[in-house]
Amino acid sequence: MTEFKMNEAELEKVFQKRIDDEQKIEPKDWMPEKYRKNLIRQISQHAHSEVIGMQPEGNWITRAPTLRRKMVLLAKVQDEGGHGLYLYSSAETLGISREEMVEALQTGAAKYASIFNYPTLTWADVGAIGWLVDGAAIVNQISLQRTSYGPYARAMVRVCKEESFHQRQGYESLMVLAFGNAEQKQMAQDALDRWWWPSLMMFGPHDADSAHSSQSMKWKIKRKSNDELRQSFVDQSVPQAEYLGLKIPDSNLKWNEERGHYDFGEIDWDEFLRVINGDGMCNRDRISHHVKVHNEGQWVRDAMRAYEEKKRARELKKSA
Amino acid sequence: MMSTEKKLPLFEIFVRSKRGLDHKHVGSLHAEDHTQALEYARDCYTRRSEGVSLWVVKSSDIVASQEEDASSFYDPMDDKPYRHATHYELPEEVNNM
Ligand SMILES: [Fe+2]
Ligand SMILES: [Fe+2]
Image 1 (cartoon, helix red, strand yellow):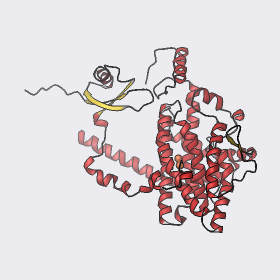
Image 2: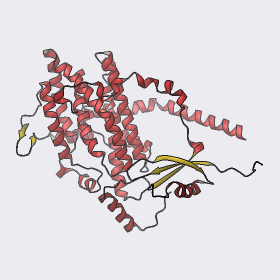
Image 3: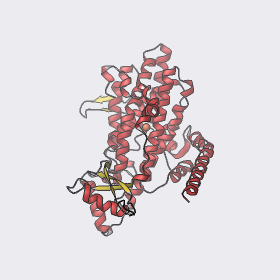
Image 4: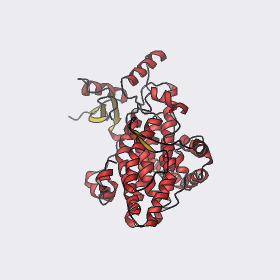
């Protein structure tokens, strides 16, 4: 246990000064309880998103069109599991256990990115996810490399290094369809039509409506606002869609010379709330699948523990 | 003559040179316990303000992979070039992702 020699008010001052000076907060530092709670909420939700995000893509591993695409998809989904691990571990440095986080996910107390509650209907969806969903995640995660909590920031650096391959493989795979025959091109367009708006929702509510945003910005847990991040995602995605010869499903999308950004239409916030609150197309499936797989793995965890105990008993006997 | 004195355990020392960076291994030393190791490490490894934080870990608690086993240990990684972003060649116009 770390002992602190200052009183709470002094500690709070030191903490805030560190944040203001762009210094990182580390696990053994004193931090306000709300900062800790806020971080646990955000990092664990981020971790859950990585893990649940394996399901929609995992759906296509056995049906990938070529062996190469299958190996690539396997490698990508494996990376996402790894991202979940980096994030759970960094949340654990804040004093919450893995078991508590998994339980919060399974009981619905904790949320995850609403986008993973949409189904992957065709192979083109796998390409669209890599391009758009990983693309949106990258925009968010790049800004989180500068988050104020050290272990979270360092996990983001590692994650960002791996993400670039995710987006590029998705775009490359979508190129094959977009430049293929009419039916293939239609598949790509259909995937874009279905994934575009949910991708914009990934950045969360408007800044004015975001419950945790202002405190998170003050503590530099978040470095850019939801709307800022969403705008950079739109700006980067438009030329990418144009290159594919695909049309983004938004009649209000157009370049605004004055702002130097694309204007775009309003998100269907009713849909966003419905899905985030548990009533999307796949919410129940995603959680029941997670519970099922977790329970099926119980014997492995039991066996590992039993083996450890046996080993320890043997060593104890030897040293006795 | 060999001393019959009880040997002090070995500790590995890690220093964080600056806030925000990882702790980095700098060396090891003998000490009675963790607290003493921390004090010795301060005196040994941070005399010129080399760090803002120290970690001490009992050497016997470290389990290391062997470099001689590297080929079989890491073998599965060598034939997966598709794990790298550079494996995907994209046209100039969209190559900035
Ligand atoms: Fe990821
Ligand atoms: Fe990813």
